[in-house]
Image (cartoon, rainbow, N blue to C red; front, side):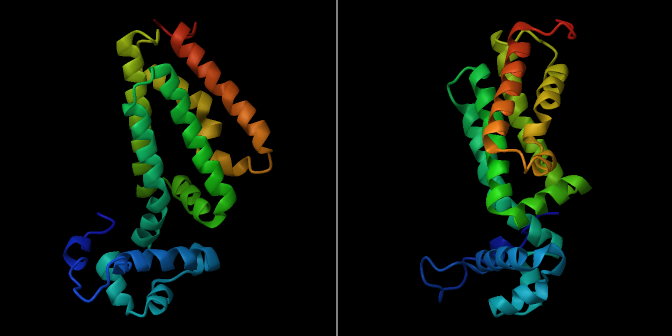
Length: 220
């Protein structure tokens, strides 16, 4: 189900709205973020968000068909730019070896920054991953798709000696899991940033070497 199925027909049709003024769905999202931070996902309600927006809860449902859909849309406010950043890295001119490092580093930095600066919304993502719900699956698939594009580029160019795409992807995510999985990053919150940076850099270097020079456990 689309998160925002009615936006096209409901927005941009208010001639009384001043230029630069937030649209109805943007206002709802802003208030949803505020309520989530103040009350948490269990106590934040559509009714409360609607009251803060000065509208009926039925009007909120015109834009977001459920509480879960609204919270997913809140998470997408920061996940979408991250996914776009990964896509820009993939489309860039750098060799696959460097792209992989940049992509994995961007992932861990984005997650760790959100964990530390906006813990309530980061926990929302962690909960989605724990429940393997639609938001988590879609985000994971997009991330894996970008990493897969880098791996395939490296294989096609001859930069990576491991020719089996499935095994190469498994190697990347097995070794990087601690640094690019939201739940793992949440569990490591008490480890200093410098220590995590060192450990992540070491893991990424092992991934790069294994893909570039081959791994004895893989069939070439």
